[in-house]
Image (cartoon, rainbow, N blue to C red; front, side, top):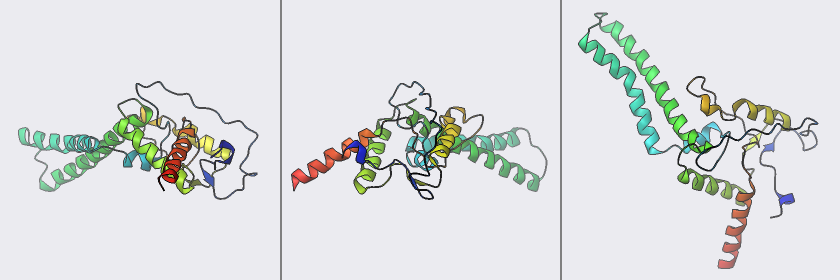
Length: 202
């Protein structure tokens, strides 16, 4: 599959190719240095959650249990005497805070592997498999979007590496765009190798 024959990484639904062009050049994102290979500098929310490991879920459950657990412990050693109804409200709020913290813990651990900040061999293999299958099916690598080329760039600039600041301001990428900081040629090359192997095996 020659490079000029490759479909765009994102399919725009509302505009033709000529309308999706802009005279403004895309601003290339700065690549942060990690100890492991970069998978995606701005992964979609669903990919981050889907690629989470079992250990991430365990860490999330443990984090979520801290807030209500502390409340129960404090109530035991120093009763608040607010009454049964009042303490139930405290526990509901503590549970909500704990659940939010637990989810952010899971998301942070998972997205750091996309950035190459922590060991990510499993995620590299999952990413290569997912994208190779999309190439073989003729699908755009990063989905479909209603955004123009320039607006895709604007969206990427708003959420690129946002996971680094997740503990201060949770910010997620819900947009499909084509700016992910990696060379997508590897997906097409792997798809070509697999298709050649399949043809040779027949």
